Length: 372
Ligand code: SF4
Image (cartoon, rainbow, N blue to C red):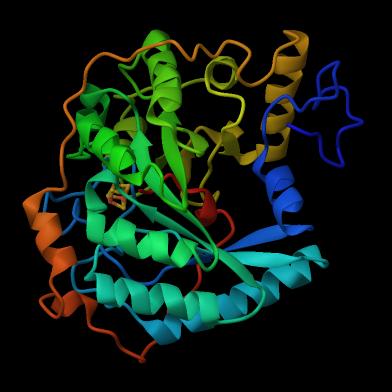
């Protein structure tokens, strides 16, 4: 785990000069030779948790009002968002070595594979500055046909397939109204192993009713699953969601900042040292965020996580136990209602390609949403 250009910082690295955790930015700099930025794209997908394939209403924390089943995948909008996103990121950061096209909102593998291929290839070919793809989806929405496609794209460019795992615990997934179980994650990862793309697991910490021990069980499961990268998010509440209503009514209390820092630090210590840490917190646009407001200060939060690791003289993976064995979990295959939509071309009027109307690209803050 070589240290990056910040490695003189005694907080960010340990006494051996090793980074406290394997931060994504440094990994990308090593891999691509400079700063890489992600351009968020809303390609117009919906979600099987919204359109009724597995349930309706969506996850309780997700503002999915725009993911209506009448959406269309629009190639022109994808191209436009890439052009605008690259332009504004160049303006903001100056010297950027390349961009990853990040298919972020909704479930970005929920379409016939031919249509998925069309939209992903459009992004790859959009500009020589695009160095890869990140595709956010659910573990129950990745049948072999999708994995074969992603694998073939990964032969040509960098690809990360991001799964909304959220938790190792089915009771937590049920609390979220996710209609997905850990068995789906186990099955998806079993079928991803040996393929050419990277896998990333999104995990939410601070879910009411989930104990500290249960969160750490999720951390240990990361090693067993064999994911290449993780994104950690604090649970936060935004307006217009069931969770937001509950928080406003004081029916649900969200995790405090100090508890979150302690949970992240222990989580990082329990996962394998090679796992890339793409994110240690999430937030939402300030006008939409109800609580916690402390997650808006991302840089300070990250610094305090590093400080706590330094105080403990700890680093990622120093408590990882490769011999740990998880409780048996029955792998669960992709639900038939999802497979049918992915495997059938032309059956989804919602996915008709249209060169009409251009969608707005997501804001920088929206890019932090734990929305898979
Ligand atoms: S979080 Fe993801 S799976 Fe849940 S409703 Fe939103 S898009 Fe769908």
